[in-house]
Amino acid sequence: MHIAKGGEGAPLVPEFHAELFKSKKESRIILNIGGISNYTYVQADGSYFGTDTGPGNALMDAYCSLKLGTNFDKNGASASKRNRN
Image 1 (cartoon, rainbow, N blue to C red):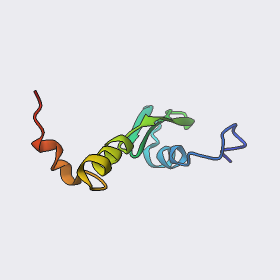
Image 2: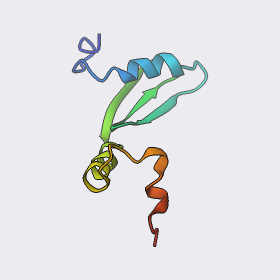
Image 3: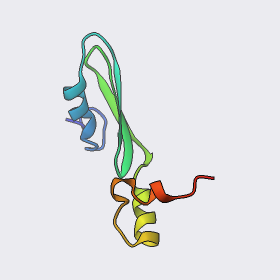
Image 4: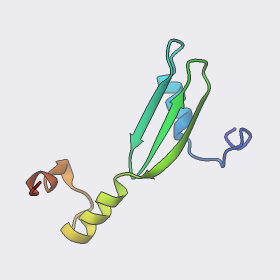
């Protein structure tokens, strides 16, 4: 169905967001910050679209892997110890 609408077959997230967050009263924007960030715009008339916006947590995960020797910063433990000057 996504391809028939002019898409590339992915992402599937906008269809999920449209179903979960639809509202006949207001339009909504859903921002998903995963490995790659993406958003979905769900309009009050039921139409929707979405796209990837760029790196999300993938950059932090790569940093943790290279510099901390872990896959990710669990509960932000390392980030909370950093000097913020």
